[in-house]
Length: 188
Image (cartoon, rainbow, N blue to C red):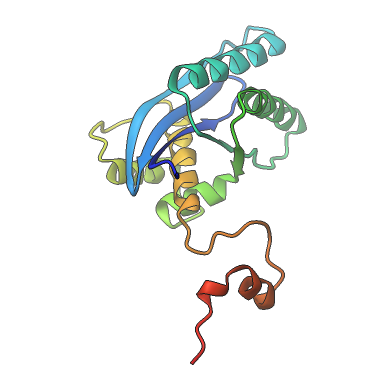
């Protein structure tokens, strides 16, 4: 029997601020369970910060028992050291989810923005305003945006799961689509 609801943990990784959000989805209804950001001191050793990220994700999983884990993939910037640090933060968060047996899905920042606002180049304020509408959130301001970014990742994941054309794996043209989706074929 298929589960009627699911809980999604969304993460916006970072070495100084890691946003996280938990949503519960029942059909099309989305309820925000928790949203916040882990603030880490830049004075702490990088490995201590990574340990705190891992521990926080583990604790969130134990506390709220999510069914799925969605995380924002790092964007490609010019600063190699920043990318390396961000990749490590993402890696320890993913490791905590995998250790708990959760399925992990990554989304690019552009995909998340596109999914929430319809514009892959939307700014953080636009994404937050749309999330307020989608989830009927009354708070006017959000700081830091890392928390709302994590919420956007979780909601994006929910929306992707609801796509009518979602199929297992990549398609290799129309013939492959028809083969994997025979019920979608209409003969006139």
